[in-house]
Length: 239
Image (tube, rainbow, N blue to C red; front, side):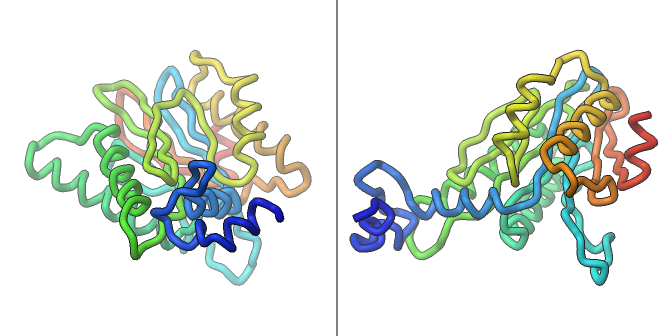
């Protein structure tokens, strides 16, 4: 009997809190598969700031493009993108925004990006440990400026998070990361980094690549304020 069928028979995949004999939380494994069905984002730390380039993957002409966002403003100096179930992501983004607001009110200073990703990761972890709820089906990518230094973090389904120079989440994430490992350089400017990210997306997506599907959010070290571009404006930015 195949391993997947054995798991179903034994019930190891019926709760997020039960380990399989292989030491896996199967609901977490399934959630990671859902994430990889979501549209992709690439984030990159550059010499002059940090950015996230996200594929909104909207092909239906009946949908109003501005009604959907892949890049979310957490604070003026922090942005986030997600891959997976967007309804799950909305709850986490709302929590991140409230946390940033509370920090400004309490301490009269901008919150560090790592404190935000840590809180979001803690929430994700709780939903893999307690019964009666399923894991969040979301990978989260947060980018921001901390004391004029760019930072990029990614949080997994389990609540683990790491800091990156460059990373990708969502559809074809492994292929995107392989290209980033080959081509990423720490001295890239934001403009050159975005150009590289677009080239990688074009190489992976092939005939499905369309600049009009993309959304860009970037924050420069000195100014420390979010700027967003879409479609043709991104093309002009990288010229």
